[in-house]
Image 1 (cartoon, rainbow, N blue to C red):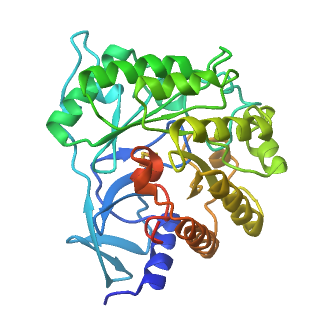
Image 2: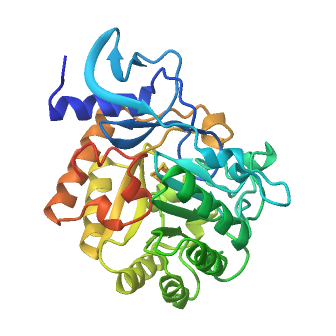
Length: 356
Ligand code: SF4
């Protein structure tokens, strides 16, 4: 059985929420951000999906089955990359410095601690310090370490782009200046590698120009929700940065990096009104900012998971995603045109499955 475009998006929405039964050698569990998944390639595109033993969706022989019926989607688990077998001269495994996301994205959390990680202030969907506690990563990656791992990942595993995020630091720049040094070091080792940096709005917006001059291709300034009530409930620390600071940072980033070289996450599943979410996405698109809409699947180690929060209704995921995809298409904004970063990778969202 093969499914049409509408049905395919409905299936993909259910797979994003209910997960799949699959043996995926490349997984992400615990860390910065909103999902906890296995990395797959579906019909040629990156996809991160929860691995769930009881899911009605099963990956077998390179395709997806629902309750035993083949759906005509081709699926390949991402292979374990060769750079995971290497260690630095001082004995740190490369995979504690950066991870493979999807089939071709190198991702790192340059500073794995966050000033907002106190239980009363941390984002309820985030587990940035849990992977550190579990010994899966190191607290701070030096520019030299990042350069060494990036060079190997490009040479050995065909990595085509890199994402650098950071926990929020105490400095006024909230961690952005450290990313300037990291981008420079990686590009000295791998000239031309597209890199996306991800930061909170920095106090001094001139660092956005420094990041661009260092060679970053694109930038993510992630607000996760445009609704202040949702922000206060889900991000008690981060919501102290007002929306107007985000707007100023997005506008300056668009001026410096260009239209559709700036993105933000919008999470589906924190209780926001779907119509308001779509309308907010439309306003971001008008500013030249790509709204990367992603269903929230609470990860192990998050406050949301501890509270028993579950993923959103797949019908809502499909509806919001298809409406935002239509707005992006009307504005001629494609994720791939970001050049680097989450919107270019696309794995954690269904926007690419919806045609964006
Ligand atoms: S969308 Fe972003 S977080 Fe998700 S797999 Fe791709 S690079 Fe990683």
